[in-house]
Structures are given as structure tokens and as C-alpha cells.
Amino acid sequence: MKKLFITAAAVALLTACGTTPTDFKTTQNTSGFGNGNTVTLEKVNVFNLIGNEVKVGDLFPSMILKDESLKDFDTSNSSKNVRIYNVLASVDTPVCVQQTKDLSQFIENNQSELAGIEMLAISADTPFAQMRFRKEASLKKNFVFLSDSINHEFGIKTGTQIKELGLLARSIIVVDKDNKIVHIQRVPELTTIPDLKEAISIAKSKV
Image 1 (cartoon, rainbow, N blue to C red):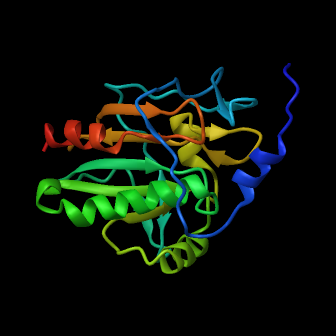
Image 2 (image 1 turned 90 degrees about the vertical axis):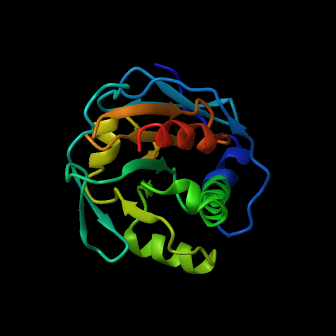
Image 3 (image 1 turned 60 degrees about the vertical axis):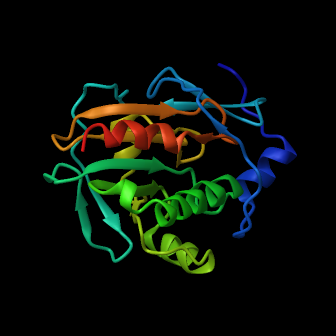
């Protein structure tokens, strides 16, 4: 088994708080989900993913998550919208700050283009941490925050769970109105951001 070690730079990325984004790059690279796959941080720190691998064509797994108001969000409920799940590692990492701010700003600037598309951001943070982050980052309520902090159901059922950290691997998953997965991207390197525009292009074709 490969020995796990974390560089000082990686620790800083994992623990840094704040709401000022840095210029982390968007990537089109993608890797598999679930058991047997890994994700890197700073390219030299390797973490293992656990859980069930989801693929395009699968039904999105049924689970109950919590939104910011502590209400249940049932992923199996029917929806008139196509859903885009933006998967974050933690709101207390600078990469996620940028990923979330980019998401909110894109929605603000392209509202008419996003008709029929529901934007969701999910992390393993508690709903209280997500509420605090939204306030500190001055984010508009133009997307829904979902928490996977209780049973890590999302992480396990989608294969985005990082075993050693208890966090989610940065990803984007598009689900059509029939709850079928039509697009997935899981970035191989945690300091990069998945391609939101590509996901939206695919989502628009399913509206």
C-alpha cells in the first residue's frame, strides 16, 4: 500500500480559510469514481476514493441530504428541471471558494440561458458551515447548498468519497429530468476545477 504523506503546501490548501479566490485552472481532464481510483493534491499527495462508481446512463442514486435550512433534500424526487451537482471538497479550501464564486457569478450573468436547469452545490461540510460561507463570501442564493456531513451518503453512493480526508472529490454530475446521469467529470487533481460550461452545454440539450 502506498504510504500517505502530505506536503506543507498541500496542508495549506486543505486548511486555508477565507473568501478570496485564487486563479485555479479549469480542466477538462476526468478520472473514474469509486473504489480503486485515486485523486491527487499538488500532484504528489495521493488519496484513495471509496464507494460505488457512477457512470453516464446510470440512474442517479437515491439519498437524503440536508439543505442550508436543515430541510431534507431527496435526490430521487421527480423534478421538472435538469440538475447539475457541483461537488466541492470543502468550503474552507481556496479552490472551493473559487469554484463556488465562479458558479454563483455564472448563474448571475446567464440567468436566461439557464432556464430549466437547477444548480446544486454539495460538500461534506455541515449546513451551518455552508450558511456561514455563503454569508462571508456574499454569495447570492441563486443555487442550493446541500450537505453530505451526516452519513456521507453522497460520497459513498457516487464514489466521490475521499477515504483519508472524509471530503468529496471535486466533480460535476449532470442529471436529466428522469434522474438519469448524462454527464460526469471528476478532476484527477484537487487544485483544478471541473468544466462548468461543458456541463451546462450538455444540461441545456436535455431541458
